[in-house]
Amino acid sequence: MKPVKYLFQASCLVIVLILCSGCSATAGINPFAPQPTPLPTLAGWNLVWHDEFDGKTIDSSNWTYDLGGGGWGNGEAEYYTSRTENARVENGNLVIEARQEKYEGSYYTSARLKTQGLQSFQYGRIEARVKVPAGAGLWPAFWMLGSDFNGSNWPDCGEIDIMEYVGKEPDLIMGTLHGPGYSGAMGRTKWNRQKYNIADDFHTYAVEWDANQISWFYDGEKYNTITPADLGEYKWVFDRPFFIILNLAVGGQMPGPVGLKTTFPAQFLVDYVRVYQR
Image (cartoon, rainbow, N blue to C red):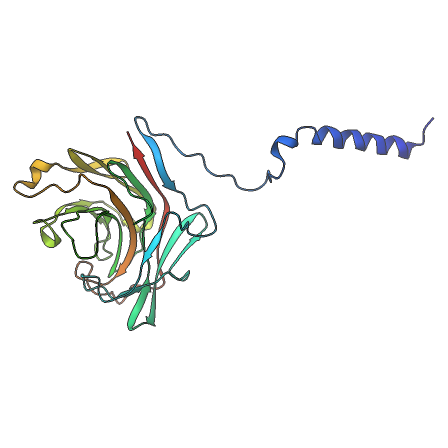
């Protein structure tokens, strides 16, 4: 009869072998680590590009930066940087942070990310889930410019504003087209008011864009459509590739001055950006 301690050791060896028998297929995977959320399917659409911001840093194959100050043609007060203080990935979100600080002659800093030269798209459903910051004078936006934009050919290159929010109007978001003859205050825009403060939670914003129309969506509900016929005599310039922009402006002609109750740092959070095509 074998001593009890040897029987115990043999039993433990058998248990270890059983537990490890199925380990080869999952070697190196921590079963307790959070797993990526499966991407949802969208009937009638194929997902062709996306960024879920689930990594540790901003993906440089998707995003680059606009840098500088000078008002950006809108009287904005911020200086855009590529510092992690102003743009980073954190807790599964892209964080674009506006800060009240003196920097390169400006009194605010923020960030403006773009896919220009990296990713461009012609037609499809362009969608993002974001949480805008509260406060008068803040101006977060999710928008697109024609890929032929060279710094001096706006509005001929075309602009699609998927979402703009101004903190002084906490229940309002806007979707707008700008092009030759219909830019700035003449842009083709639609206001979409809610019965609550939009900055209180995440919401989904999208356009569905094809050769004949562009439609805007808020939390899955369509609220506007523009066709070439709606432009009358003006040219439809939305028949070419466009790139995506995410930014948080401070001050400017549309949002107005920073409110006395607006607090900094202010964060524009982006859960994901996805592009689908039929």
